[in-house]
Image (cartoon, rainbow, N blue to C red; front, side, top):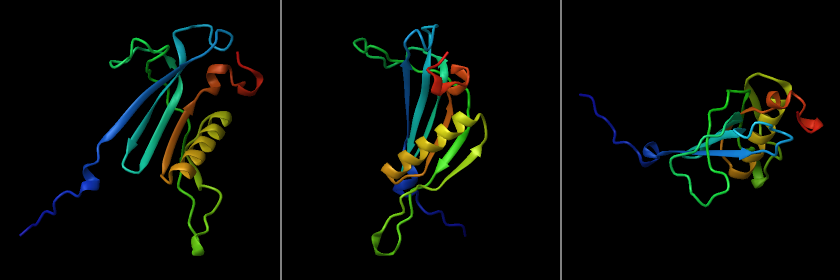
Length: 147
C-alpha cells in the first residue's frame, strides 16, 4: 500500500512576484518608454531578482497617485546565486556570502549580479538568484555616465 504524507505547511507557501520599474533621466534613456524593469520573486526563504532594460508598461494594480508604476520584460542576463554566509563554531559568521555564476554574460552585468546577490543573501539569510542586463543598454559603459 502506498501512503502519501500530507503536504507540509512549508510546501504550500505561495510564490509572490513583485514587478518594478525605474524611469531614468533623458540623458541616460532618451526614450521615455524605456527604463530599468524587473521582478522580485519571493518563495519561502529564497528570492529571485531579475532586472534589465525594457519597456515600462502599466501594471494592473497601478496606483493613480504614484509618479511611476509599471513593469516590463527585461532580457535574461547573467545569473548569479549567493548562499547565506556559513555560521562557524561559537556562532561566528563568515563575512562573505558564497557566490557562483550560473549563466555567464557581459563582465559588468556579471559583476553587478554577483554583488547584488551576495548583499541581499547576507542581509536576508536566504539563497538569492540575481539576473541583471543593464550594461548593454548603456552601451557597456556603466561607469562612464551612460549613453
